[in-house]
Image (tube, rainbow over all chains, first blue to last red; front, side):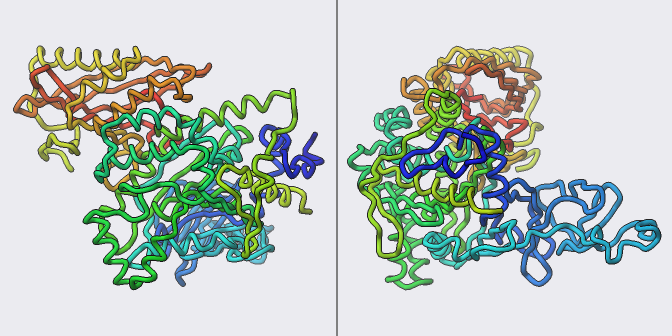
Length: 438
Length: 181
């Protein structure tokens, strides 16, 4: 099967291995998924004032995400309109103008061409006025924020951000509502890990609840024997509790609900019970946090906000959100067989400072390249990538739990935790994008 | 913290800039070098439990995620582990279901440019450059780092009160890291 009949690569209960290993399929994904879909590019707290900017990635293109003088923001292609050099090279900064180092063409915050040395030398003495080359840095047509989370799309048309987020928009509301001060601040830097495998392997695994007992069996076994299984809110306590949580029996994973949405988004419910990682805890720090939240929302809403207990919230194609620990994981497809995952977290404004340590330790434990958990996942992804090169059979079965799908009142599909519904859902969205006319 | 600040020994040690402290005698320098070489051998030979034994009970192992990172408490880290967690890590490396180590890594921990400052009261700060060459599953990977060992002399000789490893490419995307630096 070749990229020409890409639509036939996904069946209701199976997927063709080319979807993971064929470089032509990957090239087509760049055009049909990553130049169209809404994707997360940054948080408003990263660019608080006019001229503040960060470099980000929107599909195959590097963009400059920059705060405007009017408080809005723009996403600009990082390519000089003159000779094509990358204009901004530092990952973050504040500028009034972006000036290319090559021939000093400079651009305003909205990308408009500000000045050019020797303007009369261009276009046979007519200058650059009115010339397409004078249009400045190319702008990404759609950039929008939802509750401070900025998404962009290379495509001028298509569903708006709110419609695209659909049933998963609420997870951003929940993360913001967890801040007694009503706002989140991205903090703590970033962790990056890489694997020699296709990006979809990571996204599918994030909502595959059969793998933890097998892939993470080693860390579960040693954590269970550790003396640090008490509820002490120390660093060993949180990490040990997180490791042990992966040790549910299959029947228990089945009780962790899954919900899937037409856009390809999926969420899995939480599975952390008790201890410092439980949804509510009994310790002085959490008491102070909860009291601040009640001051902000009142008791009833506070209870509702804290009751939202979901683990991975997958915004198709490449974002994973955890509102309880205030984290994002952003997946970047670099090549058909190379993926980089960047993790970051948020400080809850108005919360005790100690609450942020919970987020940091969550990512230190779960998303570092040296993680006792993730390192085993990364190894499995590389084994899948190697194994899928084998041509003995072209089809990968995805039928687990198909007979258990239930359509819920809100139009989502629900399934028990061990179902492969989340993988089928993502691949259906993949197929819909890949076959749509460009 | 800046140059000249005191260096504390505790559950969350602070690491100063590589200045300060008094010079040490050649005998102490040799002793510290021998300690670092012994530590490297324990890692290269897969004796991870014995590596963890080199830490004080309240010792901490830290690999920051950003160059010049000031603290592990307000920033993400590649490793930030107490002795209890290091012990857990060593036990996991010995567990047959640790897929990330099937097959196992082979490593060489090269130690260079060692200098030592005497912090008083039986405490020393050792500065070194570390080059780790790792061979696994048909591929060789290099890590270069600057290390700071805060060492404390006790009944069993020198022990690690804190070890900070600043990888040259700490902020790069890394594939799975299993063997500590």
